Image (cartoon, rainbow, N blue to C red):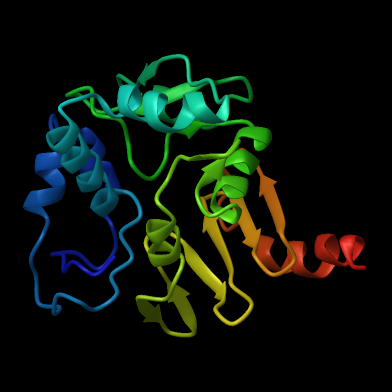
Amino acid sequence: MTASYKYQSEPYEEFFASDNWVNAALDLLGGEKHTGEFMYSPIIGTHILSGILVKATGQPVLDFAAENLFSPLGINVPHNVVLRNKEEHIAVMKDKNISGWVVDPQGINTASWGLFLTPADMAKIGQLYLNGGIWESKQIVPEKWIEMSTMEHIRWGSLSYGYLWWIIDDKEHIYAALGDGGNVIYVNTKKKMVVSIASLFMPDAKDRIGLIMERIEPIFED
């Protein structure tokens, strides 16, 4: 979220219509803003991460994730999801029963959206982070990465951001993964609490963090 781009807001329709999403994302880099300033790019910018992961591991993202994350956590992501046109793209976001992980025209899994998990699966990822990367006595994710990714690295107005996690309260160590349309994985380290919410796409979704902090957390107070 600190790369400079040639646009004020993401040209995601142009991006999705391209025949190579990673190249399209790279071609959009540049512009007048200075590198290092916060530039919210949840769809296009993050897809570059998937391209890097494929290069670094020599594996499809789904295969790498299945071996190193999903299988140890007991999460089943059965297959890739291919979207051939705009109509299929819209339809998949309204399908309550969809499973799998969306891929681009080169078969590279999306980095910021298109991974369809159950709320229980999402909670497992939150619990893994709460446990410092340990699952069933095995270190799945390095503890140092958990620490680094959930600390503030940049601010956007009054909002703090780590590595793909929003930092809700740095002192209390509360952080969340917020998906467009209402999806959230919320971790409160002090209270040892994980909350997951899965939602169909909803434009301008209401504040889920407020809902969790005001309505859900008090239920579990001592």
